[in-house]
Length: 526
Image (cartoon, rainbow, N blue to C red; front, top):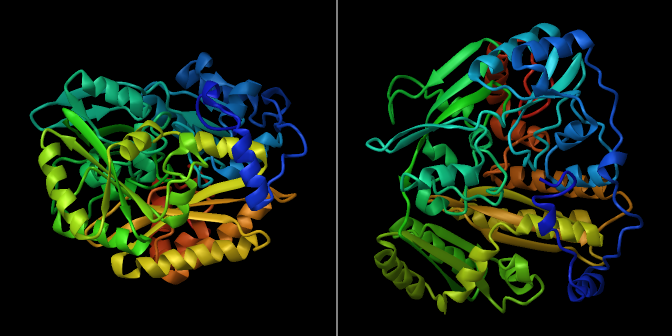
């Protein structure tokens, strides 16, 4: 993973001259004043952990698995949000961990948490490092130091129960490796989020990830049937059956907890037969309202395609559904992509096409769907190219019930336009990519010329959008998570009693407060 951007450095591309000219003419984007920092020039604080603590960590994992090199610390600093990358490109490594520790078993994780609790060392669980909500920057106040607990060594497929269709994995398995391991058994998870190439299964669970084929396979939390979790207070082993009436389901307490209650060391996941075919196609709708009405009809009446996503008018004309060909107009109206998987793909497609046609859709054939499929993981690379060209570009997402979706859409768009100015106005684009019988998600992409302080620029816009989401009745996150960026808005969404429940759970499982301090849990008194 590129330390100051996304993904494979070999895939990084400079924007074509035509696109740079379009950005300048349309938005006033200008090239940055100076080059980005090199890895070697990133400024890090000195290692703050005493040698006795480092020796204690090494006694548990082996000295070769406790890293304090400049490069290791840089590569475990923050996540991949735009503010994270802007700070790294400016050479600011102030949130770097003192050490990177790689445990090799549940027992080693438990031992490390015990040591860190005794010695007041903050612990940041680290999977693929793909958080975009400030989920990997721990608060140092009151702690001896901070370690990144990298779970990369916990990377095995432990078992496959083909009768129950359940596979047990360790948390450090990256998504492509999980698919490769399952393919040998003719199986798949069917979980393909934009972070697919680098994110881990443990991270998917900790952040309640949702993949691009969620309409067909469900969200990742729908796939989790069991978990083993190491906490400073002991081990949680959850999930004896698919469903249970034996009190509240504590699996749901761990899912989405972002490492603040414990460290997931094992996941038992529902799997499906690998599809024999995949078919993707495009449709055009006259308006965003018409397209969302068609999506609602599919979600409520069926049949649902495995992939179903709709770009609004702005995203369609810019061509953001084709990140490998950005700037080439997607035409007028709104582009909808539908994807069908399985052996029954053809029959499901016929039935879904009848609904889409009835709702006013114009079929565009398979070419738009195939273009989307080829570029489905490319958008983060495009974000890096836009940043390098001098644009501030970032995404945010929410979800709401169908009846409230138009209000939520308008509220977020207007908040971003108001926060980022009108001379010239920023590009604010949106798509729906996750649908349910009762509602859907909204995923916004924003592009504006960088100001002198682009981090402050985006924080201003993000604050306005968060407030708009809360006021308009949406959730502060559908699948990115809470981290630090959404913590205060999450408190408003939960209310004071909900916040107190989370704080009580934290106090019981992590009495010393060492796990990802400052993330997710609202601060008492605020």
